[in-house]
Image 1 (cartoon, rainbow, N blue to C red):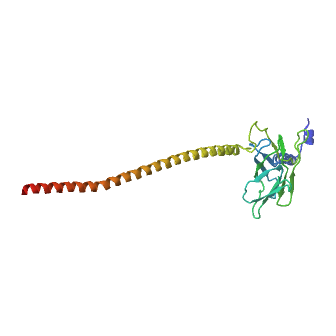
Image 2 (image 1 turned 180 degrees about the horizontal axis):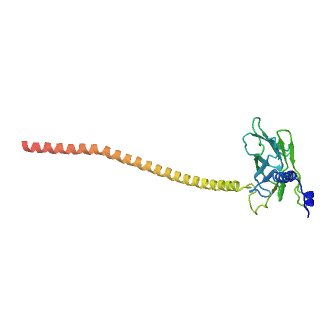
Length: 260
């Protein structure tokens, strides 16, 4: 190939740089989605869901996030410094339908180039393998990004996919209210503690009853000893007087014998 043809099809260095930057930017955007994970949660169970929210803006901070939930009986947001959480419920069923976090005035929200984690504890989650949690991300400049698009039929990822949980089936006989190891362990520990407490209480009552019986017996024996001691004390003076009388009588008899 001649140098002329090479020059004809070659791109300027500036164009190559722009194309490379655009490619990198596209890769960055594709990996900076709002995502959800729940390592300890199973189908139909309770647990903690962690939402990872990156700031994709180059100029504005993220100041609000709303996540839509699949109508949970219980859902509580984790306390976050600098944020206010609002829980929305279905008026007729009192089930939680969404949670909104709003950055408080004077706080940075999620600054440019950073991310934050928003956690929810609740359940029971649907008994299905995949659970979608659509989210709305709001920026300080008013821009909103709706993370609610489903995956394509061919598995292709959309521009703004909804955060999705993949839940394993619950183990047979597992306590759904113990969605996490900590929660189930807490339930088991509480049950064991109640049994130990009941056993200890029964033992204490037996020991207390035995102590009362021993105390009562001791009191009876003590009173008996006092009575016997009193009787001996009362009898001793009379005996002494009798002995003194006998001694005196013997002395008088002896004196009369001498005089005679």
